[in-house]
Image 1 (cartoon, one colour):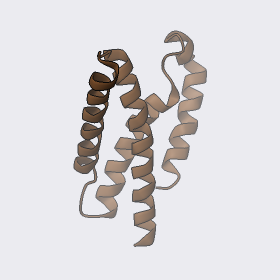
Image 2 (cartoon, rainbow, N blue to C red; image 1 turned 180 degrees about the vertical axis):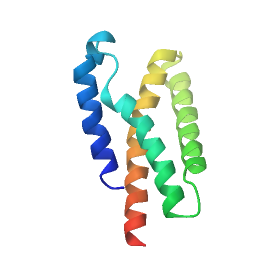
Image 3 (cartoon, rainbow, N blue to C red; image 1 turned 90 degrees about the vertical axis):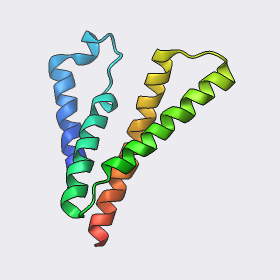
Image 4 (cartoon, one colour; image 1 turned 60 degrees about the vertical axis):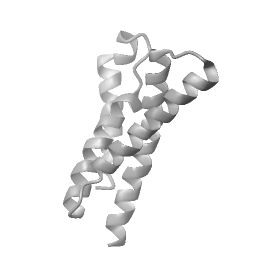
Amino acid sequence: MALYPLIVFIALVFIFKFFKLRHITNRKLKIPDVFTIFLILGMQIFSKNATSISVLPYYLLIISGLALVLLLLDLFYYKHFTYRRFLKLWWRITFFITFIIYIGVVVMVFVH
């Protein structure tokens, strides 16, 4: 469970190098963009197996709140909304939140 992110990250590095995905997408697709999906999947599987509850509904609530806060900041601070910039910022912050929650699930399992 603790090695899952490391194994997936190494596999994604090799996949990105082998298929040259960064060159195909003009350097717009990065490893954390794809890694987030695998972290969400791993977080759901490990939290369901380790405890009787799923972390996914709480995670989706946090991510939805983040999207709302970023949207309001865009509208009130910048006075305009750019869909591409919003999605890019939201997805990158989602990666950090997902990684922190995943580490929390791993620590919670080891404590119990």
